[in-house]
Image (cartoon, rainbow, N blue to C red; front, side, top):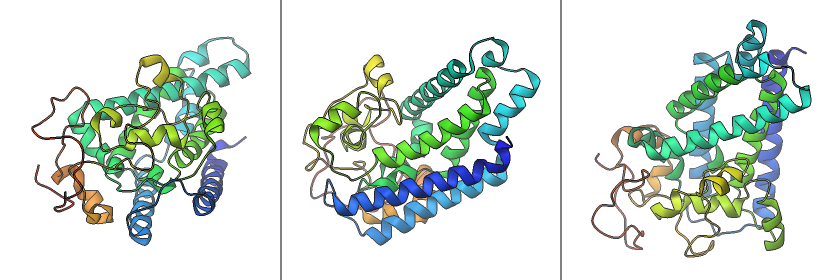
Length: 294
């Protein structure tokens, strides 16, 4: 099967379907009241994903699936040099790629320079399914490079890589959803997939909560590595979303998001960074410009 010929269509179709379903769910059963103008956020977040797509298309046209095909042709990577059943190799490939994304996510929280890029994602003042596609183009390019390097080392089947890409996009839209789930269903689901209730904690303004629940797809890595936090201290409806240093709505504008890594303050969020003076909790009276001096 010509994966390169159908990959874009498959990914775009799945992405669009999940996005529409999540948007409808958010209208019918919202979890929190949104605080920022919806047109402003939608134009910024969806504008950013459009730029990300163009950047990857023109700068890294091969992509992770293409790299998997190259590795298979040349016998590169672990799974291209073992005689295991196809179902086992495919399953292990998806799990291993998910672990790589978890570790990458932790890395982007731990290294201040990488956090500058990733804080574009966390600076969103509300939390809904479009937050799941709000990433700076430079972060997307670095992430794709890391993913392609992982594919090169693992040698996973191209079909497994395509499945992982579709799952990653879909679960990112799902676990950023501003949707209400019955408590019993959330408890069951978070055994096998990251739920909105679980991932919302990760978007808290409190650094100790921001640096938890790093998983995008599988929740197991947070359980195993001790980064799991069940609930936000203030509760899901009262918690403050975003970052302490960016409380102005202008942070939702596309131009501000593109500039934020270069001009914005890092704050006390990078893992193991010594907290600065003053409380980490956002004050109700906080304001100021969306882009602050470094």
